[in-house]
Image (cartoon, rainbow, N blue to C red; front, side, top):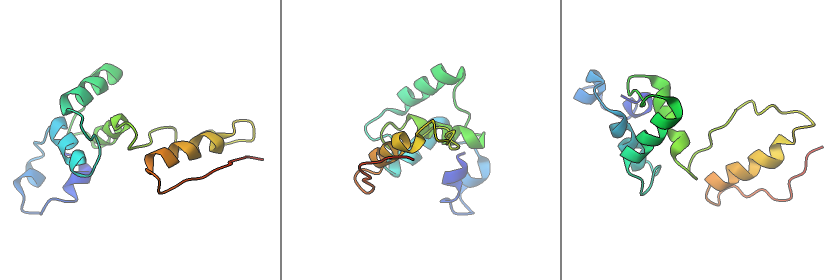
Length: 114
């Protein structure tokens, strides 16, 4: 079961103790939070399997996090260290990406780096 969705399960919930949820269940949980809108869970699992060589494992804490990379336009998934240095101009690229997933809540403009 998704480590994240476990936080929202009552302690007495059978799902919280069995850990028997599937990757599809995890995607459905994230859909309830607004991710993967209009997307069939099977297609997300297929894309994940193609890219990782095996389907997501609901028992692995990071697999559900990696699934969010497939929530196009709703999640940012890249190198968090971003190789920040003067030559790479990382913020000129990453800030517009963050703005895109904020759906208008974050709108930086005229970004320059020195």
